[in-house]
Image (cartoon, rainbow, N blue to C red; front, side):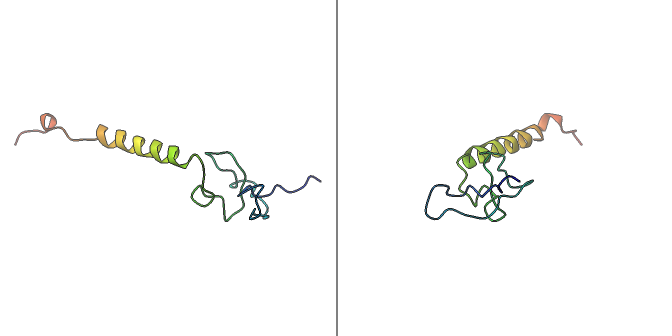
Length: 78
């Protein structure tokens, strides 16, 4: 049986997490590293790609809001 995958939080440091990585939800979709339940969120493991993720979400939201903007010429006159 293969060894359990360990959390990659602060790997190769003295304060490395030794908990087992989660199988299904333990992989960060941004940096592709494996984490335990307490470090699985990007905010909790200091994800290196977190700022890119935030910028992409900001851009998506901005584009959506701009596409739904009401324009005065489209409004019916009463």
